[in-house]
Image 1 (cartoon, helix red, strand yellow):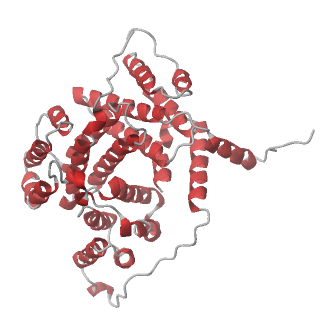
Image 2 (cartoon, one colour; image 1 turned 90 degrees about the vertical axis):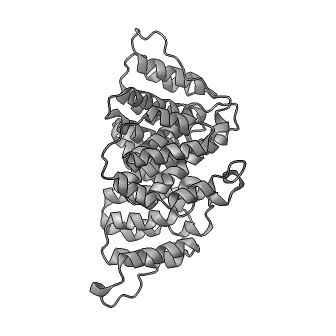
Image 3 (cartoon, one colour; image 1 turned 120 degrees about the vertical axis):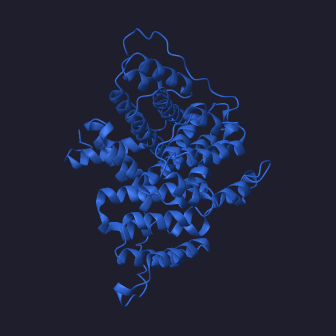
Amino acid sequence: MTILTAMTNVLPKLDKNGQILALFQGLVHVARESSGMGTRFLLGALPVSDKENAQSFNQLSEWYRHCVEVRDSQGAERVLLTAIELGFSNEQLSNMMMTAITDHFYVNTGHTLDFHNKAFEILDRIGLEHRPYVLSSLLPGIGDVSRSEESHSWQSPVNLVQPLMKAFKGLPTILADASSQGNADIDEAGLVKQILSDDPLKTLKMMFDALKSGVSPARLAQLVALAAAERISSFHVQNDFSDWFTVLHTFTHAHAVHQSLRRSTAHELTRAVFHGAMSVYLDRFLNIPSARRPEPKDVEAKPQNTSELLEIMNKQQQVAESARWVVDYLARGGDKSDLFNTLGHALLREDAEFHSFQMFEAAIVEHDHWEKEESELASYAQETLIIAATRYLAGHAPTAREMPHTARIAMRLHRGEKLFEDE
């Protein structure tokens, strides 16, 4: 579901050949993931004899929240299916489910919230009639997810749990009072810089002050996502290769929170903005040393041919070179649509696993949000997101490229071509 939703979000950025390859790659991924799996049957809704006098949505939400708390996936599924059968809206279902998974911090390193966001995004495309299967597919995984407030890194050397728990108690009042104030004028660039700092308690204070002054939770989430992208754009290749996933998870979680808050205004979901900011803080060691942001050269020259970037990514350990190429291309006025299409092909020609699809899709969507603004921060944000996506894709290339080969075989069979001919 994650890969398919990501693909649908980025298909407009690809040319026709890229779109076809993306669709076939998605089918191959789904086939491999579902191979050998048994059929999943829905458990069924709770018995409700009189729907007009059925339990209120608040009661169902409490039951669902309790089931998730005690890791009862079957109970949660029955409550969820009951809420769907009673005709509650997508926004209500999202609030119910997101509240339950944000009761704990950065659940399952951000995957759980990201998958929830993707489920509601795909429903917007395929229709509400698919809600039972799509939403209930999220529940088998709640039984063994990690809860970050239980981990040592969130409690020592700086205890992040207690300040957050204390501050969250006043969150409903803060959001209620701030809703009437309108848009706030704050130093957003300074706030992003603070989120990237090594003083998490000051970061929390500044974030809560921003909410009090009228900054919307969605805007605050957008700034956290930018800070998380900065961690990737500054990720040094001297780190362990697996640490790419650490900074990626923070970014995709922050992106999912931002997207979710654009649909919902539930104050419980706003807690996830702070979870993401604290994850950005905990990732700070992966920017020590920090990869330098490339400076553009020959800005008066014509933009390079985007095929050059594909050639660079044909070699290993070309992370810095790829970022430098992109910065030069942007400074010379290169067409972003061509660049995004090329980055899409760089993704699709590799044996990319779902993290790479997450990275590309999240960066493109966040970039498009910033592109609607005209400010120095918006320009900086757009470049940061492109650099982050480029460096991540370059860091995971080249591969054996067996997946695209399988997709090309499927395409030839679909067209009725012969794969082999006798001499």
